[in-house]
Image (cartoon, rainbow over all chains, first blue to last red; front, top):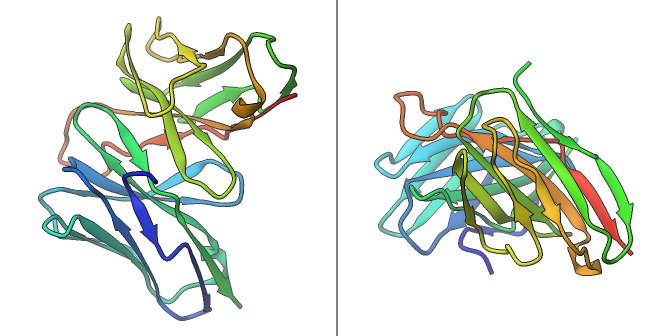
Length: 110
Length: 118
């Protein structure tokens, strides 16, 4: 498996509910990023959190980072059907390597 | 429009026939990278480049070559493609260094190239 591991692999919720996805990693990071991918298309950057930050917000997105536990979570509040996609965390090092997890597939039912 | 372009978008080829997938970005990014994505999996990094004439191996470099002669271009070369290189390929770019902007290091992705090797 890869360095960034998402949990759960799949998540199905009703519109309006909150969705929480988790990401764990094994080695130290410079920053951790979350991306969204609609089926078979390119990834779109959602939010970046640096190793010295604990929480970031962007609209309905909230990301937390716990470096002691080597984990991050992405919370999407008041989900919409349009949020249906795969979500990936990516770990970045200063040296340029970038490692993605296997993703969480989110389905939001109308 | 700021973007990363890849060509071709779709390619079907045969084992052993050399091919090149081009990648170009217009954002003056120093960093460029190639990834492959297989069904149900995340992206795996093939090669990356921190700047012109500087390239490094990612996690799955075997069977691939890259070059970075110009800042905007980062072609991916498969000298002798094999069926296990059938995959969806993405190119990405970003700035290097740090900035007060929280999104400074975000990667911008191309639309992907779906490659089938028969």
